[in-house]
Length: 184
Image (cartoon, rainbow, N blue to C red; front, side, top):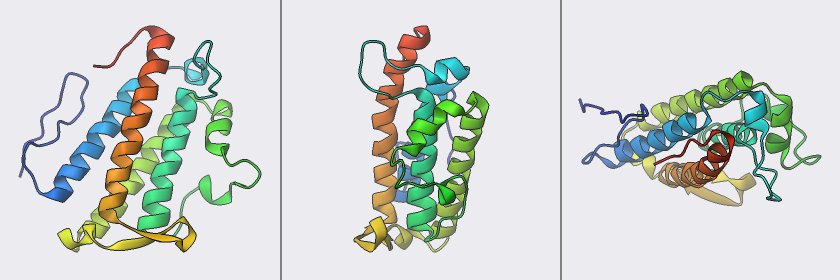
């Protein structure tokens, strides 16, 4: 069993030497923990705050809900093969393609954090089930984008690392403006 070390923000450090699945999962968990750190301790108003003087509608609350949706889409819908959780399955995405970002302004901070944490836990459970078949599960493909292409679990994990890393950069800017807290 590998010992996990945590940094001063409580993020699990990825191992320096591990198999491919463990390495990918560790980097994804590090990015998730970074995001949790950047959004922690903020109230409703702070999570709704936009960048001053910038046309973007992006908020940390919107990012929490968006990343909860991204977890749902890539792990439940794509890797697991069927959508199973609300609020996603009943959203009218045709009416508002950015519903996850827009509707977050109506949600309380703890509701957003809970939604995101629950999505992450469901995603982890999907990955555990898939990897129970061994490392070859990383190569197994899953239909994506309504069947227009297939993606491997390896691709999904790598994409999720990229998705979090990109949004963690956005979160750094928003958090610094909110209370002056900066990342590393």
